[in-house]
Image (cartoon, rainbow, N blue to C red):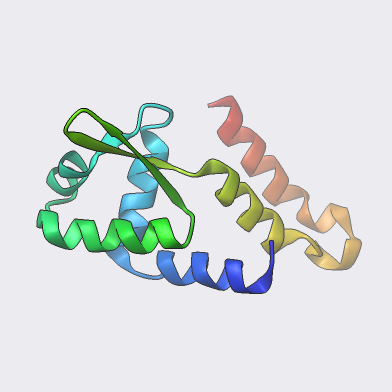
Length: 112
């Protein structure tokens, strides 16, 4: 991941509704959610939610596909992984033992 992509992703997530949206979509992987359902669950007007989803999509954090009359949104887990790896790539100056608590917590998420 390049700096510009990381900045775009972090900028997109640096707003409460967008962060909540992204976290909600992660919880609903791999099925995803329709835009209207996201708006309903987060109690956000649909036109406002569309704007937020557009920002997340431009940052490549969400993907969408049309199913009949609905657009289903899904978290782009590959982009999340790339962002996380970008942030910790040079973790602790190569001293892996300092990053071990982070790695342990991430592995615990996988097991849950």
